[in-house]
Amino acid sequence: MVLTLAALGGAPALAQTGGILPLVSVGEKWPQPQETYLIRVSPPDAGKPLGLEVYSPTFNLADYVDGRRGAGYFGDELYKKNEPFETTFTLSGPGGLIAERRFSTNREHTWESLFAGGLPAGTYTLKVTSRGDGKNAFALRTAAPFTLETSDFSVNARDTEQTPLLAARLNVPAEWVGKTLSVQNYDVDGPQEAETWVVQPGGKRVNLTTSGDGQTATDRFTLTPDQVGEWQVFIRVLPTTRQYSNAIRYSFRLNDQPVTARVGGFTPPEGLKMANQLLVDVVDPQGRPVPGASYTLVGDSVVRPALPAGYLPVSAAIVAGSGNIVSPGEIRYQPGYTKLRFVARPPEGQLVVDAVAVYGDQRLPLPGVPFEVAGRTLTTPATVALPPGDYPVTPSTVPGSTFTPPVPGHVSDAGTGKVTLEYRVQTELTLVTAPDIVNACDVTQLTATARTEFPHRLPARLKLNLPAGWSSDYPLEQPGEFSSGAPLRLKVPVRVCRSDTAEAVLAPLDLRTTGQARVRNPGGANVTRTVQGGARATLSKNVEPSAQGYTVTLTFTVDSTLENVRLLDPLPSGGSASAVRGPLNVQGPSLAGVNPRADGDTIVLTRVIPGTYTLTYTLLTDQPADRVVTTPDLDW
Image (cartoon, rainbow, N blue to C red):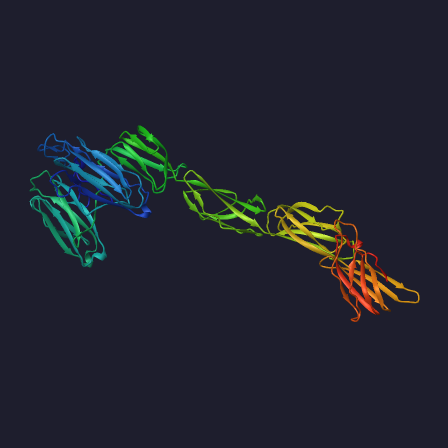
C-alpha cells in the first residue's frame, strides 16, 4: 500500500484516494494523553527491516505561533508564546524499550528514521507523547509488509486541504457479521468545520455524525455479509471552517470492545533528505546476521544491541558517521547518516567426548567410536561447540564390551565439559590339555588361548603355572596382542609325571583358568615266597592315581594258615615331605583274624588262613609318578 501525505511543504492537495491524514499529538487538555500504535511482526517477517520513519516529528515554530500561519503550514500549533514544547516517540516490545527519540522545536519539517532494523516476532507498541500547551502534527510510515494499527488515534485536519483525505482503513472480516461496529469521532467542532464519512465495500458512502466542540459522536453499524471487506474513513475540511487546523480523534469498537484500523504512511516531498538515518547491523563473529537480534535507541545518541538470550557482545564499530564506541555493547553517535555494526557471539562452550577401553587396570584410548550428542552423530575423540546446558551423550555399542550410560556432559559459556565413554572389555581364556591322559612322565601339549570380540588390539601376556611333577623346556610366557578374529595363543609341550592341574593366567586382567592331565596307572610289583615243605604265598602291588594322591592296592594270596605275616611295603623316599600311608582297608576270608597294623614300612597281619586278601590305602606324597612304586616283600 503506497500512502501519501497531502500538501506537504506546500504541495497541491491530493485526490480522495491519494493519502492519509497526518497524525497529531496534543500536549494538554486532550482526553487521550498519548497516541498508541501497534506494529505486529509475524514469524515469517521476523528480522525484516521495520523502516519506521516519521515526517516532521519536531514542533515547527514557523507553522502557527501566536495566531500567525506561515507558508507550507503543516498543522503545528503553540497556544502560549515562548513556552517549551516537546514530543517523545517510544517504541517498545516484549523485551522492553527498543527506541526512544525526543524532539523539541525548530523551523523546518524534517524526515527522520526512528527505527530501521528488524525485530523478532511479536507485537510492538509505538507511543507518542507531547508536553506543552499545543499540538504537534506528524506522519508515520513503516516498510512493507508492516503496518501501523490503532483503535484510538488523533488526526489533524487543515483548511488548506478541502478535498477528501483518507484517515484510516478498517478491515471487517466475515466473523464480525451480526455484531455491532461503532465508529466514533471527537471534537470536530460542528458540521460547519468538516464532514466525515465511511466508504463501505462496493463503494457505498455512509456519512458519519459530526461531533461538536469537546463532544463525541458515535455511529453504529450492525454488520451484514455485504459489508465484509475494507472500510475507509474520510474527513474533509469545509470552506465554512473558522480554523487553520483541527485535531480530531477517531475510535473503533466492536460490541464495545476496541478493534484496530490501519493508519499512517507518507511520501516525503521531492528533494528532501532524511535528516537522521541510523542503520544498525548485529552480526556474529562470522559476519552473519544474528537471528532475532535487534537494537535499542535511547535518545538521539545511544545505541545498544538487543541480543537473544545468552548472546554476548564482542565488539562494536562505526561503519559510517561519527561517534564514540563506549563498549562492545554501546555506541554514542552523532545524528546524521550513521551505520553501526555490533558483533555478538552466542553463549557457547565446548564438550569433549572421548572413549576408553577399561582393560584390567589400564584405560586404552578408543578412536573412531560413534556417538550422538545434541542431534549430531560424531566419532571419538571429538570437541563439539554447544550452547551452555547439559547434554546426554548416547554411545554406540562396541562388540566384545559393555558400557554404562554416561552422565550428561555439562557445558558452560566459554568453558569445556568432558564426557568419557567407558567400554569394559569382555575376554575369554581357555586352557586345553591334549592328550589329557598320558603314561607316567609322557609329554602332553598345553594350549592357552585368549579371545575377544573387541575390535581393537589389546596388549596381553599369557603365562602357564605348572604343578609339581610337571616340567617343560619351553618358555611358559607369551607376550603379544589380541582382538576380534586374532586370538593370542601359548602352546607348550609339558612332561607330566603325575595327575594334576595346570593354570593359565592372562595379564593384565589376572584372568585365570585351569587344565587337567591324568597319568595312567603308574605301575606295580609282585613277589612270591615259597617255604620248602611248607606254605606258599604271593604278594602283588598296584598303584593308581587318585583325586588325592595315589591308591595303593596290595593283593596277598596264601595256601596255608600263617601267623604274624609281615608285608614289606616301603614308602617313597625323598621329596619335600615324608610320604604318608592312609588307613588300611582289608578284604578277605571272614574267619581269618587279620587285624592289620602298620609298623613303619611293614604291615603285620596277625593270622591268615588260606585265601586271597586285598589291602588298600591312600598314599600321600609329592614324589613324581615314576618314583611312587616301590618293590614289596613278604615274610612270616
